[in-house]
Length: 133
Image 1 (tube, rainbow, N blue to C red):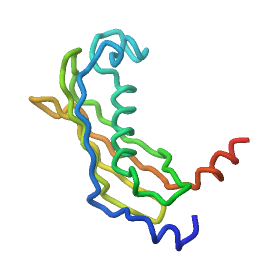
Image 2 (cartoon, rainbow, N blue to C red):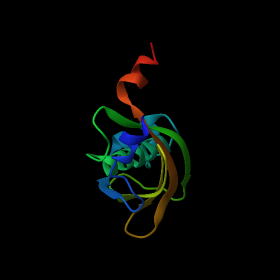
Image 3 (spheres, rainbow, N blue to C red):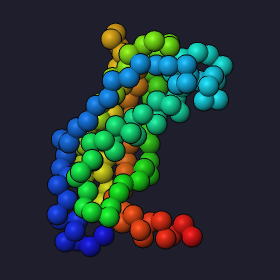
Image 4 (cartoon, helix red, strand yellow):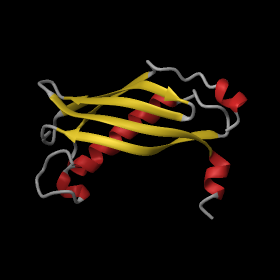
């Protein structure tokens, strides 16, 4: 991405998004293949956390651009059984050119379920897809 397009991005630290969801059977470790207990599976938690980071960027990127996940550090601290409501919050804490770093926290009504640092990079969508061919 050229420097002028990057400069036009309205992306600054402090950008936030959140999502409240209820753990369903489809979200469990059993269903996603990451374990054999009926609690929120770590892969599903990670997918939701990444979705919240992309939600924070909605309508903030220049036309023709998207962001891709490049690095994740996730600590899944507590089990969440089916029926538990979990709120996932993401905050952009660092912008370094095209590199965006989010801090993510997932909480149920009683405790922190997980914390994560998720890094995304802004890319030109067409150029990125062309590189896959």
